[in-house]
Image 1 (cartoon, one colour):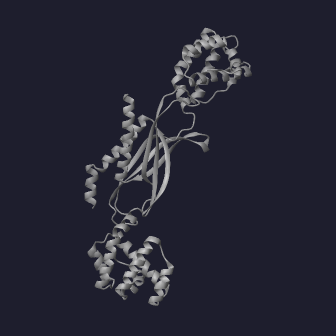
Image 2: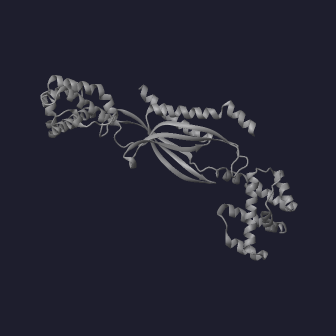
Image 3: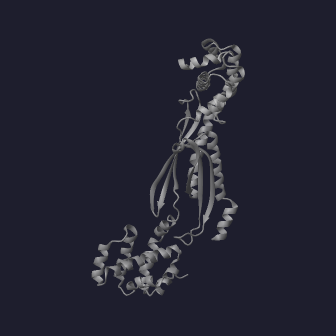
Length: 204
Length: 198
């Protein structure tokens, strides 16, 4: 499967095709920097002076390269597909090797980020619990009410960053605790059931 | 269990059938219980018969206090009956009726009282779905299992006059995260069960 790029995207990275290997290496570094910390106009300015082009061209090239990596990861290209795609774009063998190494190097990380980008619901992070017996309250003295108080910590994931989410204090009685545990255990068993495994095999 | 002077005063006409007749007394008792249990709409006192409304009102308030205080302190039926007879001059048949009503409804009254106060949301149920994500906007081949968990917890809504509402807590779990969650819950269950045996 080859990567198919849009025309303006192709145009943006076209400038890299004619550059030396060293320059391409530098662009890979710039893309890495972009992935980690976002755009850095100062660096693009100096790069533009060296290559004698507009800073915008540099920025487009960097963003084009980043987009190329993300697209490749999104489609889960294997090494061969990636290599062919690069050659089709007009890169030389030497260029392709640099890009392949770069892709190989960052693939895991980008995939990880993409994996966490899709849903906005918070993730389960931790559960702390304590068992207590309520002995009295203002409205009812002399009671023995067993209670389980829990702190449920959730976390939001935006790409590779985990943002601490809500911390909920909840309470329940022993009967409901057992019920809750049973319901969720059932859920876990379902992941290992034949139906689920068969489906996973089938859809791969 | 101590009753204030006002309440004692209000109890006076309830002690025998001269001021408030038996039928009216039983209706009053019923009203008190249903008000505490929040089981039905409150009736108007004026519907109980042509008695002095202020006496009736005081009697009603006192009866309500007696029932609540007795349930609140988990007072013994004998203690209650002797207190009514000795401290408030209740006739034995009146005291018997009140104590009978108290004993019959004690558990319910106490259950109702236990709901008053501030508690964290109380978990009552959970729902889940298991999804296999095939593709999403940022990845063409995802292929992973994911749980959507919804925990239902009962709580009082402070902005809505403390009406009871069910709060729904939604979050997602990977299989590993759910394993972690369940193992922690199982820990708690084990602990509670061990204590229950002792």
